[in-house]
Image 1 (tube, rainbow, N blue to C red):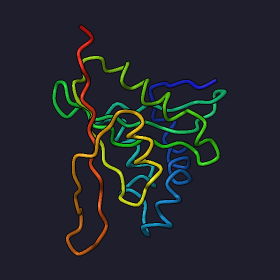
Image 2: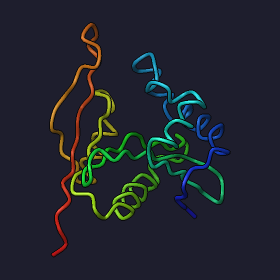
Image 3: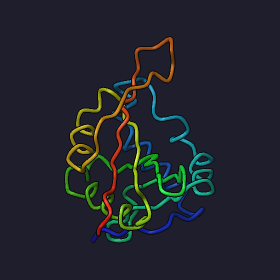
Length: 156
């Protein structure tokens, strides 16, 4: 059974370990993982600055979701990560549905994902996100992030 619960400080070490495993493919492709995702201190910081949820399967942490409130009605999906052995089982879809239901006031969701993460592109597009741009975080590198957005229509 998959559950989503608010992450606690006591979860920081386990969430860090899960994130390291989840982003191992990025480390291979790009030579690094998202900044700070591999440190307990950064996960603790996310818990203070954002809405951080742990993803549980049978009461075991298998992933996490980090959501930032950009403005009153605009939210940023900072990160969603799931253990590689449990990917492609519908958990990501459940996670997106969970956050969208958890923030009913959201009018727009934004996220970024690396340019070579083709599975991510397909997943987010399947979930209704549209690619709106690209950004090069380091001007001296060819590393690029694809920017995605999803506008939520009123249920009237």
